[in-house]
Image 1 (tube, rainbow, N blue to C red):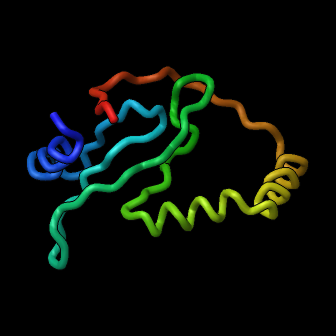
Image 2: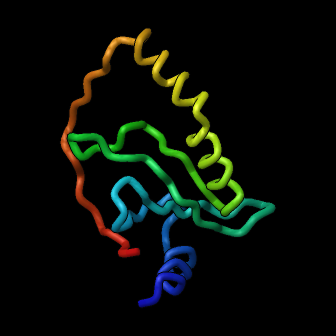
Length: 109
């Protein structure tokens, strides 16, 4: 099945807030419920996996259009952000991670 058709089926038949994993590790799709002003829609959720196979953050970054991903790319590629992260790493203690990875249905991209 073509990707666009798979997405159409997911938006029409998926449950509200249902998450579908993709073949790109750390990237999933979320079906957003309809509201009074907007029909149901889809968002890309980006939450990279750590060395233990679990998402790095409790919540990822939701992307709904090309303007949003361009804005995030610009922020992530800014050298000042790299300097800020380096300074944070000097100040903050290292965090420990725990848990086991979960398996689910995977959408091939």
